[in-house]
Length: 122
Image 1 (tube, rainbow, N blue to C red):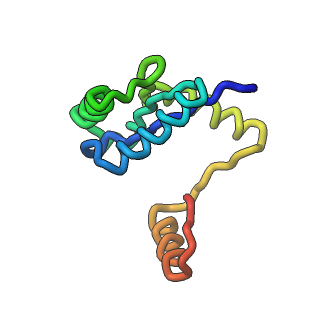
Image 2 (image 1 turned 60 degrees about the vertical axis):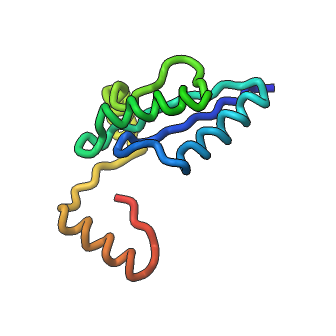
Image 3 (image 1 turned 120 degrees about the horizontal axis):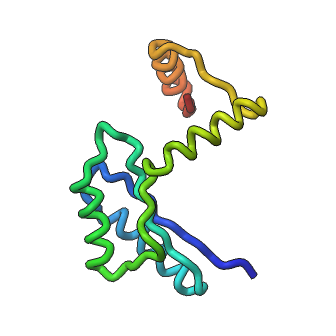
């Protein structure tokens, strides 16, 4: 049987709230009940809104309530070069494509999606 691994991946764009604590707790309890691993991955790729003070508050709050994570916390932006390399490899293999839409075209597609009540991922 494979080892169970769960994770909690908050964005440090504000302080940890009760909904985040609930998610972290459920994932932590599940992985520990199954003898698995629980990881913390900080999703800090939104550079405009992510703040170190929130990252530190999230980490310290989880530790304070007794949710310990295995290994060190993973900081998503530290792996940006890996993501770029993988994206370039997918492009090279023809498994992905670049979007050449203007900002205005993207906003127009989002508006159309909202009126049709569908989500547009661009």
